[in-house]
Length: 481
Figure 1 (tube, rainbow, N blue to C red):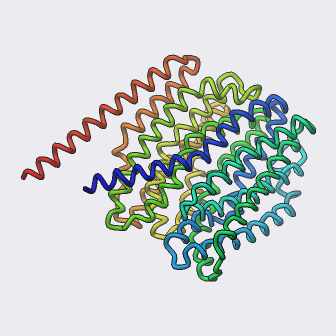
Figure 2 (figure 1 turned 60 degrees about the horizontal axis):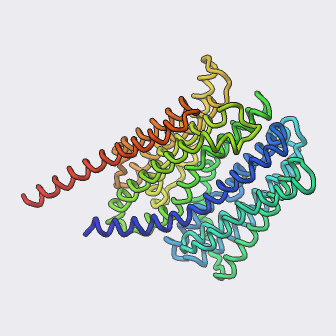
Figure 3 (figure 1 turned 60 degrees about the vertical axis):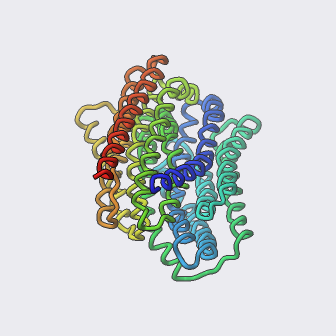
């Protein structure tokens, strides 16, 4: 009976998760459509300016949301103020984001030249506008996620992901072929969609301001700012550092590799919009069983995602990167980045339990430490003799996720009695590792990768079938006794 219940919950969660995944599929598809035009119209060096700007707004979104995107969902589900209190937090978060935006604009002459080398720092006003719009959107989406308003979540997310690059590209082709022209269209759409998202929240629910609730949301959310910032900061530091040390062209190649290689992780994050609320809502006495069951399902999905990515990457990445690609370097960067996906899955399984406890302060330390450790390991490798190559720099991403997983296990053990069987999923991790290595070694062999992926998937299915059969026999023996 418990197995039947778990299967039902898993099927519902998967269905909803796949709908949420469309929000991540949209920007991935849009990148495949728009980026080849943008890279060819602007050229490698001008695209480097766009690459740095994109890294800036990915980093800045985390600052402007103040971590409230994580706590709004929790507040709507678990706190007494419920949905009306969460809407109030969305509004308060919008006000805080506007203040931080104005401060960043005022300080732009001081921090801009350090981020964008070889171009006018005033260009960075466009990614700042994108930061504001996307911060408003993310906080509103956190409420939609809690209330299972999938249509609002998906439509607004897709609008920002698709219309932004599309408008930027249209301006680029019809007005002036410069990086600021493209970025102006992108930022205008991001801000418009963010404002619309907040208005949708207000139209559906009247806010009820409770000072202590907002303070509690901040106390849970703020510690996650360094936690979330570390991921974006890692990418920004790698791209901006490459632009200063190697050049804008190399920075553009690294940014494209990071962007395309993170596609499996983006899809995983989208499905997590259904996974996290499901774990939050599950009663504590059955939460462990549901978490372990859904975790196994997630890992199988990740294997399929990465298999598909490795098979398609050798053909798709050079097409998307265009003149920015240097041989197979950008493709190899994307494959290296994608190898962090299974470790991110295991990390999420542990961190759900940490958020349920409400004791998130430690994340303000552990995630930045993970990023610093990853950067140090890569830096020491370069000092030890490895070339200053964007492929070497990209290794920082999977290293970061490995460190994150190790630290999340330690944190979860101090906050929850539920165990997460991370090491029992060694077969899935082995399949992904074998595919990534094959993709790195034989990027030209378009026949080997599909055959190898099918063979590894068949092997994984056989291993899991035998394990399930042994489990069923063991349960039968125990019941008979």
